[in-house]
Image (cartoon, rainbow, N blue to C red; front, side, top):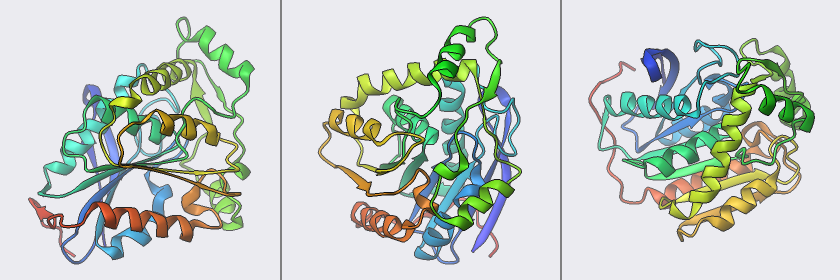
Length: 290
């Protein structure tokens, strides 16, 4: 496996950090990951270790205001920044790969970003995976949310800790220990992020019937960060027939590091195999030395 690190130019010329992982043999598809609020591209190590040996290239970047990317922690001026950053990242990937099936996978807030993106433009995307997507049903104090809405116009950069407990992420003790020791994680959200988020969620629900890509939604029934009823409601609004919703009894928010993550990965691999039958192998524009 070859790991590559670098930067790409996002919205308004900002330089954003990314990582990618490549199998030794020609890959069968690209999976691009978008992390959630407070996370970063490095949280997906379990996913990388599972997918790359199976012949997938994996790409992930740090959202602005997260990880190794610049910006105030947990702040955006407008949702357009997230959307155009993702678009720029996909263009960066396409500059390196030809004829490559491409699947987008967004987790939590990243799921919201991915759904918004593909509902605006789905060029060269072969499928969408969202795990525990943040679709309006979230465990943040109503007082904090109301304060965010109040201050968004006057003090948009006003920021506070969201009060989401690390223990809500996973039932696995090693995962919880990793959360506590990870210096790149943060717990903040700004007033403007709050209003942009809820406006975007409303837009996503309104346009859900327009989604025309294969969709896999995965959610834990015991998720206390992004409540599973949000996924259920969105799934019902999607009319495209190639859609699948899986809810895992007792699972917490971060499915990819929860106790039953292997069951989740098995379902994921089955879905990927079904949707990549007959697809061409990826053809590189750039050869990475392995």
